[in-house]
Length: 156
Image (cartoon, rainbow, N blue to C red; front, side, top):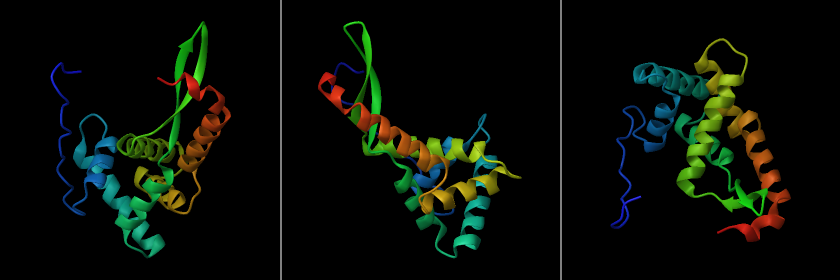
């Protein structure tokens, strides 16, 4: 943390095909060991499959899937008097989308399928329809936050 003022958030460069910052951030999350071209190929192939299966605009389907997976609350551990409590806190918009992207990637990776592009397209379509592993993860997190609402006064 700087001693003088806040550091402004840098703007990223949008992706080449859709011109979207959200897509570029997701491609960066998808990338392994610096292989960005491979991550782009996987994502764009998955978007082509999403367009074939849904018949709609793939960017709109992807953004709706991200919105459906984005959590509103999360829990953080706080140690109070020798006990550790799970404190529910609200999630900022940027952190929420980042968490949603991570969950989409992880859920797609955990699926059984032939290629990562196919698994990713299936997970995006499931998230768009309100199902799938990423949606389950969000629901579990919201249940945990709801169950620990009594400890919200420990937030500081």
